[in-house]
Amino acid sequence: MSKRIDSHQHFWVFDPVRDSWIDETMQNIQRHFLPEDLEPLLKANQFEGCVAVQASQSEEETQFLLDLTSKNDFIKGVVGWIDLRNENIEERLQFFSNQKKLKGFRHVVQGEADDFMDGEEFRRGIKALKPFNYTYDILIFHRQLPAAVRLVKDFPEQRFVIDHIAKPDIKSGSIDSWKKGIEEIAKYDNVWCKISGMVTEADWKNWKPADLKPYLDVIFENFSADKLMYGSDWPVLNVASDYREVVKTLEDYISKFSVEDQNKIWFENANEFYGLK
Image (cartoon, rainbow, N blue to C red):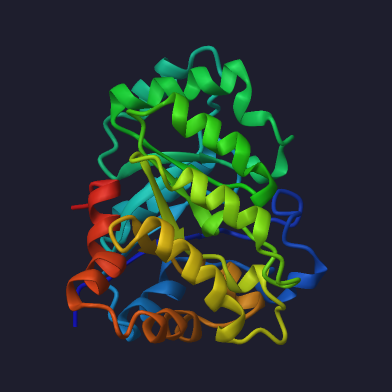
């Protein structure tokens, strides 16, 4: 069994106002989710650690996740939030720079206008990341892929990873425009992709592995095992599945791959991309 890292999950102390995106359709995740809830799931599925990713947009969130790492060694890295459009961005990055487990940042771009990533202030923030060796997680809907392509093209030295395979509409089965965007963005050497968040884009109650397969085929054809990493998107996945089922879906899909390639997907790529220890 190769080593495993879950490259994408969240923790929160549920706050109905701050976490208003967790609406009534997602009642089973309207509660606290903390390291003691995740650790047994990681162990049961042979994961030795995880990367905790921001869920709300504040520096308090970044500090909250970093505080959790100090008490939980299995949290190997944090993708926090910082205001990339802040004119004092370098100063804020400097402030966090002594935090060894802080690996990168993310903004919830899926909630922004489609041209958000073209904005001058946002781009100034992206430019500021490289000197600190921080990564950037791209969280978008598939319609925002053209803007993401422009971003990664203009910052060839910056390491990017696409979260949730850029959220195609798996539920409706539409694939063409998303596929075109993936084919384009995968051409850039500075871009990786997380195999995460797929079940929540599918039909929550009725999805089956066959619904995900065409989308998995596209990302494997374009990114290859060298650029893909597994992420559970726990606990959000609980609206449509459970931890074991999501892991097993990928296990089954890559079961015919070489041991070397499986190891890249489960462990090495995340380890290398985020510089985990």
